[in-house]
Length: 432
Image (cartoon, rainbow, N blue to C red):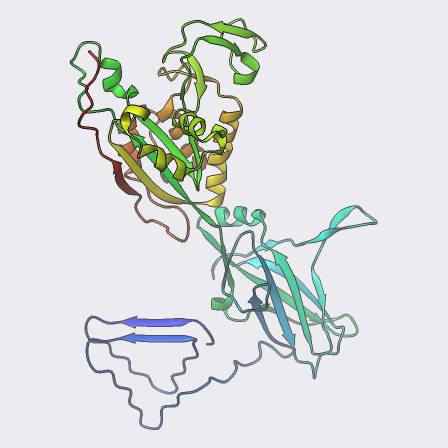
């Protein structure tokens, strides 16, 4: 073996008996013990720089992954640029020798590995297409290297593997002067040196204001407030903030702009005079987002999460935010975050109609719910972080999100965190 990390932690007795040679080559070797550690040998114990591993083959010496600066690596993120290096035995392989290669995704000992095509980053002027890249030529020192962009196309392979990562290696063939294949093997030669590739992660932050406890479903005129309209749901993807609410201001609204048939005449081409928009049928708008944007003199789509945190610190009489506010956080893969982001960007382009009735439009909680569901499309047998379609209230969304786990590799399976960032206002009294 060569490279890697070995860590051994024993709460009780750890005994290892070995007949013959016991060799470990590693960058880090850690042993933790509450008592004495002893190494004994009938012959001798040698500490020092390990010898290089044996050649991978007769002509191939080794293959290894590095970053752009030729620093050896074992992991990389999708979106990064990496390099693969091959060292041949220069005493046996003349300069300019051809090496054919195929990039592969290792699927384990019992599965056939998927080939991954590589293409040039520059178009062939003769064909106006991006040519496949599948061969290298050695230099005078028997070396050859290839730069690779780890593009988003690799996400498909991680999804097909049913996990959060793929392990990449090259199937390589050496050809002699007669153009005859003389050796074929996989590089790196050790599976633990295959390149582990996974997606970047983004933090999802959901903000939920619960209806104030002073409201009661049994008090006359307070049914609407009790079921959740006095609360609010919002979310951020990374630092980009989004939310949804009603525009109750009477006025002229353009159907094309909102992508909604306000006057029910069968088209979306009119300017419609809405005299009494309400929570049952109103033009949509960013809710806290517009309030924050108005104070800062920016557009609602430019509001950042920290600016909303700052807004929540303002006296509730100026913001009208008096319920208990929860912050729920969990990590997602970049591809999941992009699907959520796409949904919100489309919604902000066409704000459509706000309604507490789900058959009419969206409201704050259903908007957040729908965006999150976009990040986790249904796959038979791969259910994760699903929210019930029946969830309509901030309290219901909070209950669902408490069951969430992070889906990124870096924080995989860690429970979502829930923090109360603004307590309920004690001086608030509902209007009669």
